[in-house]
Amino acid sequence: MISKILVPTDGSKIAQKAAKYAVKLAKETGADLLLLSVIDKRFIVSQSIPAIASPTHLIETVEDYLKQVAEAYTKEIKELCKRNNVQSKTLIRTGHPVEEIIKEAEKSKADLIVMGSHGKSALKAAVLGSITMGVIHKDTRIPVLLVRK
Ligand code: ATP
Ligand code: MN
Image (cartoon, rainbow, N blue to C red; front, top):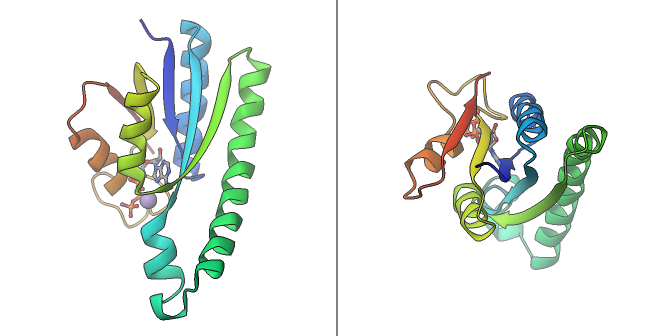
């Protein structure tokens, strides 16, 4: 019933906790894991650098740097998968996290999405993080499992 699990991660402690839960679940069900990290385009353009000082090459440099950071934090989960004989694949995308998560889940025909209730801004977020809220409110039939902080 569960043969592919999509695990979106932002590298936060809670997302890593969710990923570890997903590895255990994958081991028990024999599912494959798809690790997805989205470089938030809104963040690159509007917050880290003012638009006026954002020539394309600078944005690309920031994007490359963020991709390297994402590679590094997904590596830990990839290794955990290897140790547990769970097949895994890492994807790094650029765009809006909610859109990319749903797009990838549909495209790869994931049976389940496992993610954290919160992410990097866990301290200030009240009920649920905005990416989690976005994903559970999207029009999709794919179930979502939330790992609490
Ligand atoms: P907010 O971002 O709304 O201020 P937050 O950072 O605490 O609050 P979310 O960003 O919603 O909460 O994070 C919840 C979960 O969503 C994370 O545990 C992770 O699974 C997933 N997630 C968040 N950001 C990304 C991202 N850029 N790429 C992939 N998955 C993400
Ligand atoms: Mn966040």
